[in-house]
Amino acid sequence: MADLVIQGGDVVTPDGIRCADVRLANGLIEAVAPGLAGRDDEVVDARGLWVLPGLVDCHTHFGLENNMMRTLDDYAAGSAAAAAGGVTTYINFVPQAREENLVAALEREMPQAVGHSLVDFAFHLSFGTPGPSWQQELSELAGLGVTSVKVYTTYRDTSYYTTDWNWYQLLEAAGKEGVLVQVHAENDAIIAGSSRLLAAAGQTSLPFHGRSRPEAAEIEAVARGLGLALSTGAPIYFVHLSSPRSVALVRQFREQGVTALAEVCPHHLCFDDRLYQSPQVDRYIMTPPLRPATSVAGLREQVVAGQIDAIGSDHCGYALAQRGAGRTFAATSPGIPGVETLWPVLYTQFVASGLMDVASVSNLVSRAPAEWFGLGGKKGVIAVGADADLLLYDPKGRAPLNEADLHGRAGYSPWHGHEIQGRVVRTISRGKTVYRNGEVCGSPQHGRYVPCRRFGSRGG
Image 1 (tube, rainbow, N blue to C red):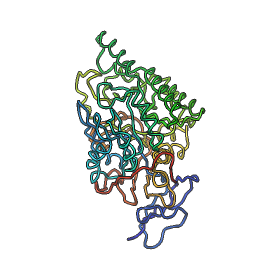
Image 2 (image 1 turned 90 degrees about the vertical axis):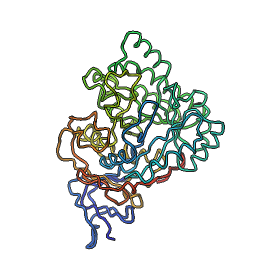
Image 3 (image 1 turned 45 degrees about the vertical axis):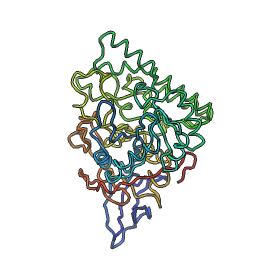
């Protein structure tokens, strides 16, 4: 079988950007250098294209089911959208039922993904109310390659919620096991109080979603988590931060020696809360909600300044019809699709605008998340010996994004109609083309489970 050579593109490597060929053989990157193509090789002409590491989307919710509804984007649809967006590895959240055995939760989820994913995948576990043997289960879980668990400080009446006591105990145990604790940080009591006031005033429709979850709720929960991490010495990772004050707190504690990490999402970097007054408010219901324009500007400045550790999509593929006409903000499931638009949006917002260079933005969605979550050296990098995961991106051309062209089942995008610079030309997963020029062409049998190494034992 002939090797595949990606020829003449501008290749983003850990050592910088250079015009070179990339030879792929046996699912791995075999060489990066000029003039690699031989007579018997299959050659892809990449002249004029960025050749980037395949994206590692560290925050997806494929096949998510709660008490109200299930996302239309299961593993098959979600991974197809991922492939079309240049994502070659995603890390999906496994929900734990109340007091469910942690390993049993993983075993329940695994068949939904294996044989149904076009690209590779890993898992986080959503840690809610633990059972009596959870500490042993946590060790077993890490041994199976799930080395990150997430607590929710809100959604009190659901299986997702983790009490402060259980959170504290988890941090103590996780630090010893090399498990990274992630946090959805919102103060539940503040949200409950805000929601009661709004309900008393008859303000329960979707436009009031943002006001029900004020920025202070996030800032307080972040501060609480940082205090617990400082006390236990455990690493902590805050997902989808929406406030620049939250990020500033993370950086402050990091300077004091706490291993604290900040993740943001494209929607909090692009949209502000004025959209909650628009006729299309249902397109922007996510938690945490959109913030004022000043907060969005502050968060963007922190990305440019290198104060953000990773960017994930927080893909949650509910259809607009599932929101329901006339629903209240308390009776609808929050979440928006974003895995397919992750790179095009970031490229447009930060690279094409001149705010950042392409390598720095690429790092936030490839090499950095791979390293934080124990996939470093194999995923998220163009280097000899790494998996042959590549994104070929044509930076030329600018056009409005058309949600009808997307590949998920949610059927819409909050970026519909927004100008996008460039396009994904080809996505290659372990040497196999899974997306090319508008068409998903991979097999759902191709994607495989990739175990993560424990935190603190990162390779690559």
